[in-house]
Amino acid sequence: MYMVLILIALIAFIVFATSKLRLNPFITLLLASFIAAFAFGLPFDSIESTIRGGFGKILGYIGLVIVLGTIIGVILERTGAAIVMAETIIKLLGKKFPTMTMSIVGFIVSIPVFCDSGFVILNSLKRSMARTLSISPVAMTVALSTGLFATHTLVPPTPGPIAAAGNLGLEDNLGLVIGVGLGFAIIAALAGLVWAHFSRNLPSTELEQAEEAFQEGKEQYGHLPSPWKAFAPIFVPIVLICLGSVASYPTAPLGDGALYEVLNFLGKPLNALMIGLGFALFLIQGDEKLKEFGRHTEKGLVVSAPIILITGAGGAFGAVLAATPLGEFLGQNLSTLGLGVVMPFIVAAALKSAQGSSTVALVTASALVAPLLPQLGLDSDMGRVLTVMAVGAGAMTVSHANDSYFWVVSQFSKMDVATAYRSHTGATLFMGLVTISAVWLVSMVAL
Image (cartoon, rainbow, N blue to C red; front, side):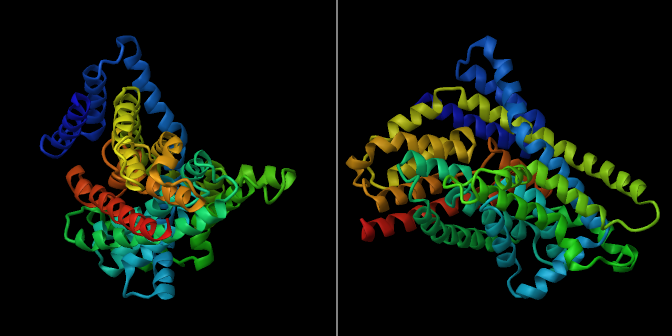
């Protein structure tokens, strides 16, 4: 029980230090990492390597993606392409429901793309739509982040749901998992939209800090690009990542020859974003394109640097918690409560809240509950599918300070930590509770 109390105290320290003492989140998270290591009794000779390893591991995946995504975003904003994208989306889906529009975009993108990469890619579009339609940037942020999060935790081919399905013996029945997952992901995304509505009055400086660029007006951009050119730097990488996911599907629908090798290579997020950056070059006008590109790159590096550091510190904090017996303690103690389909949710939610990674929570919780399915009355194809859904709902509950996604969302959206907790963290809690309620109701009928 003392381990749970330590975790609660650590979270309270992070919230207090960042929101009341105004400490930089990077320093706060590093301090929290060391405090957690000592409090949980990690061996002294492993503390430094654990923190350094956690910092490097998360940035090994998301660091370069953040840099490239930020540079693309700067180019989209400074060339007027972001304005073109916003206007095109508004024309296609209308002006009445902008938050729903943002949620739908995120929902679709995050099926093949990790939610943090998707947020980085789509942040410029979100900001432009919020500015163009005078919509609360916090509401738009919540709509995007929850739309991305819904499919990230519930719908293959995202690695977490695929691993959970494999652990539960559904590797040959992924079609059913995808179909059911899409249904519950819609419910989760709708819950996120509800929370976005109630978050619309929370403070944000995002549009104030972007005001200068927008006040210049369209005429300052010169000839605005066509919608095809404007969307290409974002959607070409997304399409490539989708094709890479299809090529890597367990059933190998495209074989294992040259086509698979090419699509698997192009579909890696880093490789796809490099191609997207190439398309972004076509947006730059004038006779000194390379010099202008250099200026955009410098701006992108300045913007991305603090985001990268804070995200890495969040990874270090999560690595320290993962190295403690906390997750194992919660999993073992909760797995024997006998709560039916709710039990996998509680295990996954405890693991998610303890160590931060949704994918780790999906993989670990599904492995923990797999031997217990007969005792839980879930030892059937539909029972196993609903278990994947319950674990996925738990894996979104909740995204807070030890989750890199929390810091990507808050820092790109210019939110202070207190606002991020009230908006993004509150939304993921509400999503998880609504989703598991829906899973439980379906289990009452289907099992």
